[in-house]
Image (tube, rainbow, N blue to C red; front, side):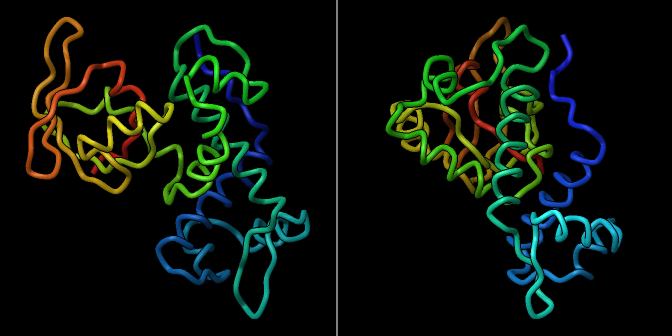
Length: 202
């Protein structure tokens, strides 16, 4: 089954602009119109985002507003849910935080941190894939972990934390674990756990 994630074209363009802005902000610190235009957007795209209250311009610098952050977070949440975690599957509608708690085992006390980390992703969310999909021999940067306190603590103890570069050394056949090179050590994790580790291929 194809993903349900189907934004309207205007919404999609705005979401892409906000994603591009966040990536530029992480890289440059200060973002101007020219920086955004170099990423492939038009002057009118920026003006539309400002007029709509999603961005603002002060002293030649572009900034994202609370409304823009809310839209961006909603986009990332839907894309993460529909196109990454449940891609190609029958799935429940994402309609409340209770879904993350019941289906994805995120502790209720960690929900605020989950959304904070989701908002802070320094890349386009569309650039991410689950570690389980990374081919043997490829390297990737760990960007986001999906799970409760126990799972995240376990991954951190193995050195699998956001910002870490790892490499898939071997994929065991018939649903076996993945052998990884992480910080000069070799570790093995199950495929279920690997599906909760989102990475950016290098």
